[in-house]
Amino acid sequence: MSTSEPTPAPSGPATRREWLAILARTPRACMKDALDTALDGTPPPEFDWLRAPDIGLAMVRGRVGGSGDAFNLGEVTVTRATLRLRVREGRAAVGIAVHMGRDKERATLAALADALLQTPAFEARMHEHLLAPLAARIAESREQKRARAAGTKVEFFTMVRGD
Image 1 (cartoon, rainbow, N blue to C red):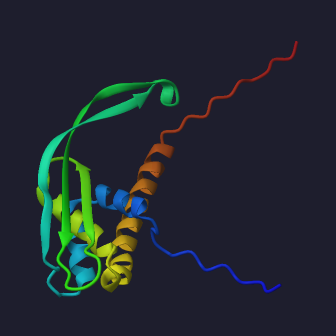
Image 2 (image 1 turned 90 degrees about the horizontal axis):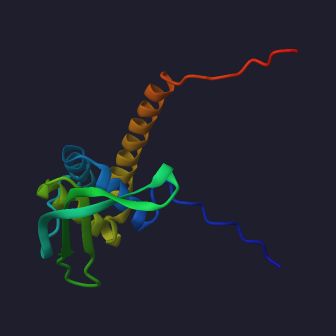
Image 3 (image 1 turned 60 degrees about the vertical axis):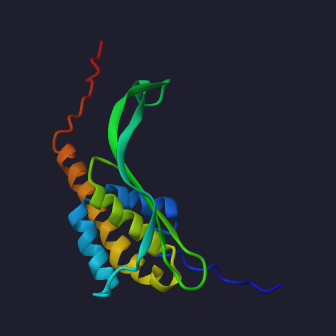
């Protein structure tokens, strides 16, 4: 029997679900800068709208006590967009974006980034220059919030009395 070594896991977000989550959490200015860096001065490819950016509402659900029964908490404003890259050969990638808020340009940039991440010619550059920096930025922001919250943590303890 031959033993084969497992292939190393990719350094960045590997699944579309993971990179869509990163794109949904990234502010427009950061996404625009990262996309410009990833494209390295080349103009973005042309695309056709399947669904131009539009603004609507989505129901947010919560859980009693964080893990109990689900209930409708309220509605939030969301922007969504869907586009298809124009390609001369091969399969045309379809990019989607959905995020909270009313920023149509941000939805356009995220949908374009999603489509480029599915295109073999751009995939490596997009992972390295777009997703990796944005994921690091989100992780750093979470760590800062965690550190601020840790500063307010209170330890409660009970002293046992001897009878």
